[in-house]
Length: 296
Image (cartoon, rainbow, N blue to C red; front, top):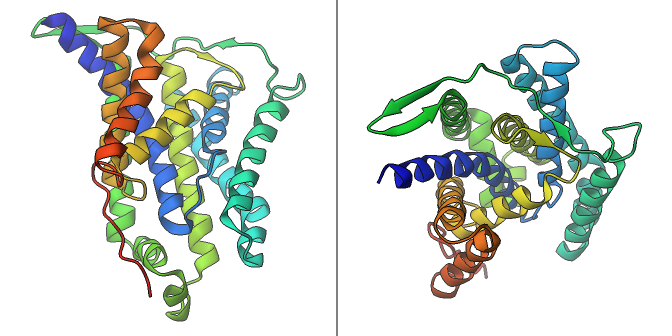
């Protein structure tokens, strides 16, 4: 029983990291119906910036995370401004934006793997905190797990406050409902879309920093699989729904960790993606998604 509880805690840790990435996917899709496949690479850059801030720049880890979030927020706005906005202004088909997203992702991965940027080698992340463990009902919990869980909860609460308690959040919801009507009401749609990219990218950066802390090894291609799994989590929960992204990420984390613990690590990815297929077969909108009415 203790082993099951420990694996469940590990699944929560992984699922919470996926949740911060999945929220970025679902917010961008909810507003402009775009799958930003470069989002996983923003996660990677956030991890590198946080690690460099801690190791090379001498910043305390919380400040290093904030610097990484700020840097990736600027990066997210830059990607939207340079790669996606021109296509949106020209009314390009969605497939063009999707191909562009894949191209941006590949560019970031291979550019950052150059020797004068991050390099292609794996980097070990030094220990951020002296290890401490507590025994609660026979379950061993370390301070890194506590830090990851608390940080993610704080960021999720902050996101909810931004989306549902601020004017910019109200504008984001208006743009997601009807972009043209929002523009007629005086909302600067391009600014709101840029802010959405910035917010999602900042959360992805925090996820990258926490991932580097919990699984201390980073490399330029580290964002591929977490990004893909976070996207899967967003679809599983209901793409476009923030609570759905959180739920889907927690499910993905549990399935992945429990599969590795009780079956085999070889099947952890296959079973996680098979779960997505099964859910979509019976509920195409995802666990918390809603069927949108057709516009006439």
